[in-house]
Amino acid sequence: MNRLLTDIEPQEEPEVVVAEKQQPAPDNFFVSFLSKGFVSTEDATRALPFVLYMAFLGMLYIANRHLAEKNLRNIDKYGKEVRELSWDYKSTKADLAFKSTLTEVAKRADTLGVHVAVDPPQKIVAEQEVQK
Image (tube, rainbow, N blue to C red; front, side, top):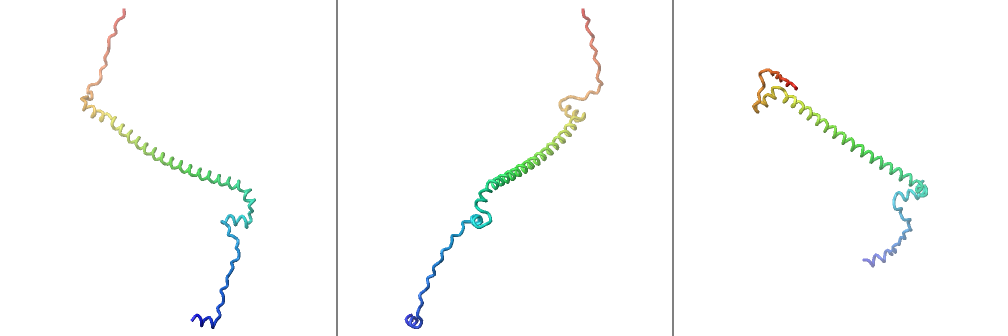
């Protein structure tokens, strides 16, 4: 069968396609941008200190923002703590005012055996000694 096929149609030799040499693709976007773009390598090198300065300012800005937010959280936390301590102070003050009333003091002193005096106080007069 192969013989018949070769007799009828002469087989053509396969053509060898030689690949043209292509330029190597640029490494990344920035290399191609700097080599073919509107910014030359020299311009980019001259602008590098400014770019670094702007990056440094950006980092300072971000750090400042984080510090401010941390301070706000602390202020909030301390404000809540002050309110809670204020409530404790007010409740303790009210409790002390209640416990220092005459009737409450009398009730507590009664357990110790101390009673409220019914007789009015009397004035004691001491005689003075005569000096020689």
